[in-house]
Image (cartoon, rainbow, N blue to C red; front, side, top):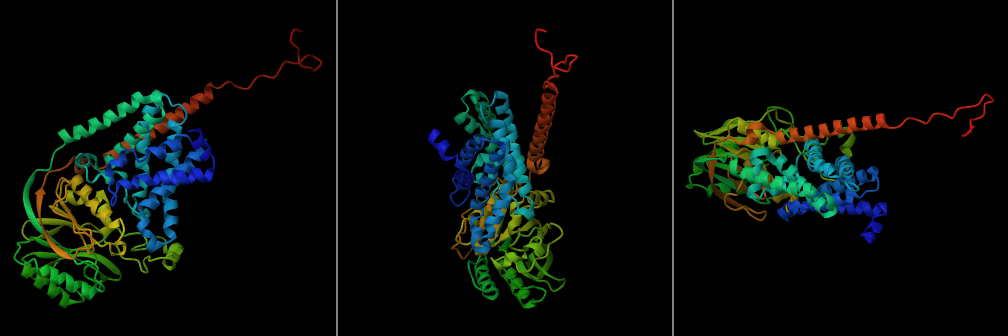
Length: 521
């Protein structure tokens, strides 16, 4: 330990160690998908933070750890944004600086049993505060929230139906804090073990008592994934060819991926007629995604458009939450130079104004989302409240085909399905495409990045209301309340200490000649 402490005495080495420790949780996400390591992945970072010599150094270690986490989570952006990826990671990583200070404040030195108990409640709340801030779409959105690493664990999916991905993040950090205390603070093992027991009890209670979505029907939805095809005309032809293979399979809906149509259908009636012909051939409506300049209003939109056997149905959803730098440049007048060092958007896409629930056939209601929007739990929750039967995400990861991004994106749909109790279809242009039932478990097989196929899925339907849909982000509200109460308590404690501190010593008495009086005289 002395050798390690001597090695970490160098500020540069300590910063590098913090960055590596902060990157470890990424192993829990796809593609490694070592979901179980999320329960201990924060421990090295926590141990480093609690031993920081000063609060300022702990804040630096929090910043460096956050930089490592953000860079590892978004490393696949490097081919597109190049060096600007490092700038973004550093800016977002700064959000963890206060959390680093908070860890040292509560766990530094030899913390009392009371401080450890408070840490088990407040440190997860601080982590959620960081996730809440970075979930704003202008900062990149809620991609890589710690709780979303648990998309494969059935007990975690049950918890998601109670408190959303926020509850998973909170409990994961609480477990990591408890393990760090068990490793480093022997005198405080009782509250650490109590924290682990409480987490296990919460999971067991959710498993036993939270309402399960009752399956009450089934729908057949086909996903068309053309793969990497150069040019919008060739891509449309390949999608058309794959869709015709679905004829006679009793599909209720056919879904194409994001940017599957590169032309405005109002401006290209020939394409609209070809899509209507496909709908007649398959006996199902087709949900396509148009990425083109509109003929009826200025600007480029990404839109989910429903086409039936008689042509355009009038059902349309314009993407509301755009990808920063990919689809628009925030503060373009200041950051427009990014286009010269990477593949950032040359022209800002336009935003839609509201979510849309589409009516498919006689009795099927679907809620489309486009790409990045599937990361936002509030959007799927809103659509569920509006009465959708199936959630649909249309995506394209062609730029990041050989990275971890496609699998990371596909896994998000499992959390959205579990949170809402509604099945979700994640249809992509180039993979990975996936479908999840109302409990968040996978339906059928994934279509990988090397697939060019049309695949039919028999999807169970459920229409119950999960606690998360009913009560919303209650975990976040509780966490912010805990942080506020702790801050008020610290403020009161500081004031009391200042008032109880002894005042300055009175000056010694002086004699009539002006000399200080001497003892004994």
